[in-house]
Amino acid sequence: MTAVERITFRAGMEGAPVGFDLVAGCGRPEEGEVWMTGPQAQLRVPSPQRPAYLVLGLRAPAAPVRRGLTVTSGDRVLGRFTLTGPTTRAIRLPSDLSATPDGLTLTFLADDGPINLRFAALQPDHPDAPARPADHDASDRGLMLRFESLGENCEFGLVQRAYDAEPLGLMRFASTELRRLLLALDGGFAGIGAPEALKVEVSNGEYMVSDLVYGLHYHAWVLAKDMEAAELHAREVRRVPFLARKLTEDLTAAQKIFVRSSRGIETEEEAYALVPSLRRWGPNELLFVLQADAGHPPGTVERRAPGFLVGYVERFAPGENAHDFLAPQWLAICRAAVALV
Image 1 (tube, rainbow, N blue to C red):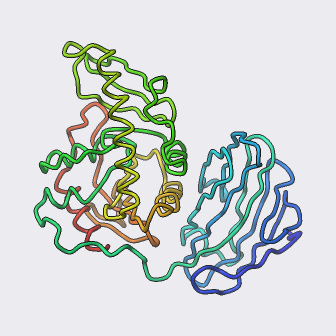
Image 2 (cartoon, rainbow, N blue to C red):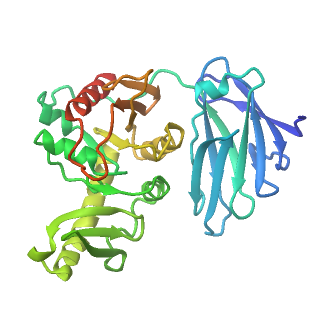
Image 3 (spheres, rainbow, N blue to C red):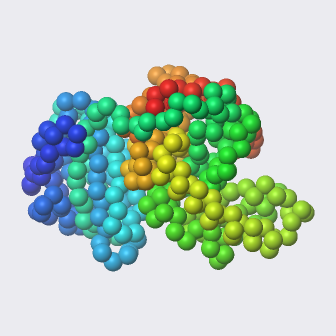
């Protein structure tokens, strides 16, 4: 396959020239940007000397039109994004994908029309985690209070409860899709908590609340027999914007480690897209928790990139019993994460 054009620039931390081969579906590069000429484009990345992290800046058209973009390598999905305006998304190229002699071919598939893409590269260097106070409470409860959940499910919020930690958190007991969480982080949670955006329903006698702006779905921890729906709705209209402001303050302070877990719903590559969105607010750390395997024992944590930790638990709580979680393993993960940062 012959490249139609090569785009070369200097990489972020180490300054080494990096060249991308524009294989198909791209126009000529202009000042580091290149347009997709159709709904699909291909880019070939040469194999790096050591594992590299490729940061892709994805620019949507000026008009606020929703665009979906999927990035793949072969049959492996590296990222799925929903773009609603000028934004930046990041895709981490795992070392097992980037170690082939001929490099790596990426395919960009847009749902509806071409998207303007800006490419940049980031070589990992020493982690640049923020300095954190050394006088934290050394108890298990104190440890758990150093973390804040970013949803997917309520398991980590219940783990914190098991160690008597009850922090206020917008997403502590909430679930939402990754793509909508990215939009919320990039948009500063604008519009969340508006009266028309909150929907109250009853499930198994308990109130559940849904945010229609960013797709949060969470427990109200109130039984329907104990409160009228209108009263609960009014409470959440006051409560949700307050919790959103608190979350943005925590993001700016960058003194907590943010946690998201995946029961097979999100891959490590997809979750990495959260890192640049979190670090726009401050030098934040993301702990992404996966199910353990032969190469990654339960309770362990590894640093994958600046701002990105991956931890492993033997299993997650089953959907039918959210309280059946492995608290000691979660505690070990949190201890290991704090040791790394």
